[in-house]
Image 1 (tube, rainbow, N blue to C red):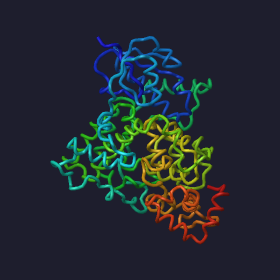
Image 2 (spheres, rainbow, N blue to C red):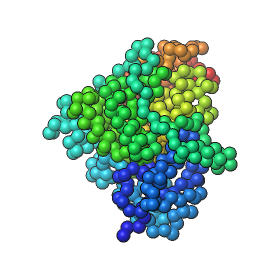
Image 3 (cartoon, rainbow, N blue to C red):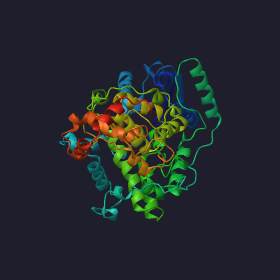
Image 4 (tube, rainbow, N blue to C red):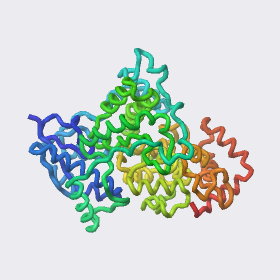
Length: 487
């Protein structure tokens, strides 16, 4: 017989369970070594305890300070975990290791595709098309459904003018139970004892912590939001934090959903006439393309990728407003709103993450590794394998172009076009100098001035740098942003 299987807290779905004995561990030190969002800590403990209850007599549910305290010296098997640290722990424990699960493609699949390719050719779009072709998903023989692999160009609509939201039903949310109340009491106790340090607001729980809840969230997305996801995936409104996004990254990253079943449900909705192709393809690309690609890059780029990546020489510490999730202390309406959203829920969709939080951090030169850690800690779906490529590579261009071919930054004009954040802001996205100067608009030019020597050879930056050289008030804008205290 196989030894008991130890499951980590992101391996809680049925595809990690082959019917044998299970070991789960609630290790307090895991929560104590980071400054987590309270909603994230609550979600992890709630998911673990709910899974233990579901498994009944098949599970040995242990409580300890450290994993080693509960597991050392035991004969165990594990499914290969999702971080360098967890894999080191497994090696130390001497557990029998099974291949990774929870992704559409295997590590061997990626290794075969990447073999012989330089880093500059490990492009997500090429990987995505390779997987689409191999799996036949949204394909008609050798050709992609609709004649194109990618409908991203069609999915960039700004939000409806003068709208408070998209007019969609509120997203599905769970009903808390006795386990959630117990978790809340335990977190209060651990915080009062100084054993954990938490940020952000608590409750009610907004995201799935069980398999049944995850399936309900998936069904709700397919029924109510999928048709509008494509057109408005890059738009944001202050009155609609979810827009048409699924929020399924949370149960996916807990292992409660398998990405293939999400893809199958989305594709079935398209073939059943319940969703347009552009929306279905956009979800497939995010999951089978981006999510799998980021997972594989985590291992391919190596354990020191984060520590070794600071191509743009960004060394500023994160500000208190980020560390404490204090949007009330920020004057820029977009940044204030997004920080408040993260404080309240531990989540925002990808545009506030990339074009508000990430864009601001890039322009201001915050230290990339610290920013990556902050995203892991402050977001309910943040994991050590998700954030390096997303934050270090795409958002901060700290790897010099291995993940993204150019820095992902913009001035206030983009924010004004794709959101309603600018309407009530005291800063003007059209102004770069003076008391009303938008810190994103002015910050864009100050950023280009700072990093010009390092990105001069990037052909995709030739046009922005040409604009910088024509800027008649360049020195004044740079000086203003160097001294800026109001933002």
